[in-house]
Image 1 (spheres, one colour):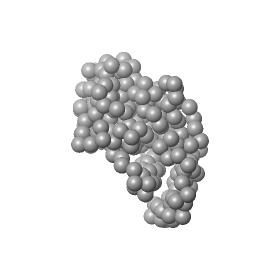
Image 2 (cartoon, rainbow, N blue to C red):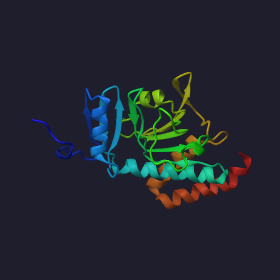
Image 3 (cartoon, one colour):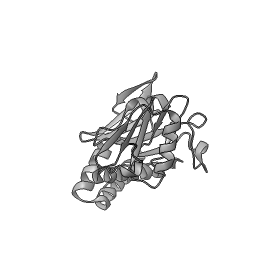
Image 4 (cartoon, one colour):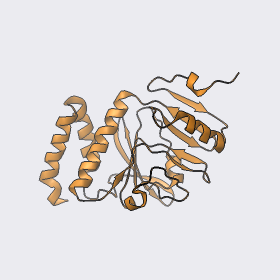
Length: 215
């Protein structure tokens, strides 16, 4: 007996692994799930992972995304935020949905595009994963050529930079040189949990106003 996807119920924080799926079956599942869903997908070499984020996962994603947008705007850097867009490359047999992502150097390449194919389009310059449930597989992003990947875990922000085809953990962000981004992100997330998002954002903007000219 075969089960339809709509018969499977995943609670927040749970994941489902499906093995031995070829690319065509993955595309069918992706289409059946649609875009208006809470789950996140990761596909690599025949293994599909479906995960439903926890509420705190979504809160952390939003505050980190807000900080990035405010910082880019303050520095007058053009960018295109693409949220949790599905990035896929059939030739590499890889697909992933980051929690958030940004095109910065390559922002012009995606203006006006609603669908991306990494066989022809560039990968996002920065991808963000809220890794509370250890979902992130670095290999997906590495093979898709994402140059900078942030993982926010229970231990705080981790920056991974692609060098020579491998991710190297870094204490600084190439997209935000001379900015103590790990400290700022960790502080903002902690404040959002203790004081609320609005207070955390105001405190970050105050820091930015006092320090932007020096960076």
